[in-house]
Length: 334
Ligand SMILES: Cc1cc2nc3c(=O)[nH]c(=O)nc-3n(C[C@H](O)[C@H](O)[C@H](O)COP(=O)(O)OP(=O)(O)OC[C@H]3O[C@@H](n4cnc5c(N)ncnc54)[C@H](O)[C@@H]3O)c2cc1C
Image 1 (tube, helix red, strand yellow):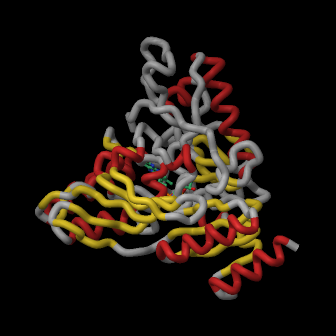
Image 2 (spheres, rainbow, N blue to C red):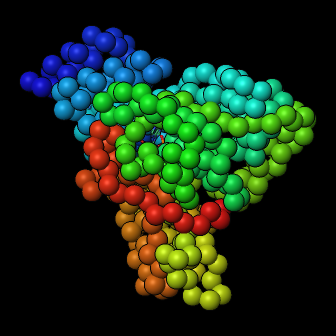
Image 3 (cartoon, rainbow, N blue to C red):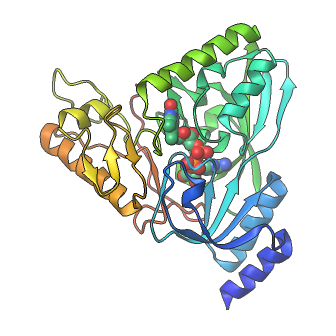
């Protein structure tokens, strides 16, 4: 009964062409894996987000947020609750040295916009899949840079749908971490610090980043980027002579190329698992566990996931529940 009334309210607010029942989430992720969401709606702007969150709260339905789907593994059975996808939006120059992007703007779109506007700061992020929301949630990192270092302010939505403005420092950025993981708040907009730049020079930097990715990452097969965080000094102990890199640990534990069904540890980059076609989330998860056990047995290092599980019993992260599962701050290496 609750479900029928919730669905009727969703349809009333967003219309039948936008509310989907049992929508397969796999195609909306870069892994191309995972079952359906009970309900799914793509949202535009903070008013829609607020209304969706309030409806879900009123009916006690868990909410999950999806951006570009480039850092998630969705369970084969899918997600029980409402999945809201924030995709697309506006970028505005709000001051000579500041731009504001909606959470659903893609990082690549943001790079293209800043480069062509002659604004420096984001060009090296070219080729990073996903959205501003996902990048802030996990404090995306690339070659020692953290995206959080560029963020001066943000607007967040609480699980009740209330909007709140914060400064960058309030987001508690660390390696692979922001406070959104602790609170379940949803990013609505982010303000980035930018400088002046020459478009041709910015474009050259963007091209270098893209070329680096092409050389070092298995981009031809579906994946979710790096599976594991790198070990962190102070938290982990890595034996002498072994690099402080999750990929190197997986490789030296003899797991590069390891397979579970159609999932495989990439032979190009051992911190990537690729879907060789038709892989199940269960196979990918089993391979993740095998890598963790292998590295623990070989080196005594406990690897922690960088990817986010969605719809798995123990690992689901509904935005409307208190997650409590903080990722530990660590070591930004690759
Ligand atoms: C080929 C490849 C290369 C990659 N390279 C890098 C890299 O260099 N550096 C790096 O850091 N990552 C990399 N990644 C991982 C991924 O691109 C980033 O983690 C990206 O920032 C995820 O953004 P997303 O929008 O796809 O998030 P999603 O995968 O959709 O979601 C990830 C998490 O963020 C949450 N989330 C999404 N939007 C919001 C929001 N608006 N508010 C609150 N929470 C939200 C979700 O609920 C989920 O918990 C790579 C992935 C691939 C496939």
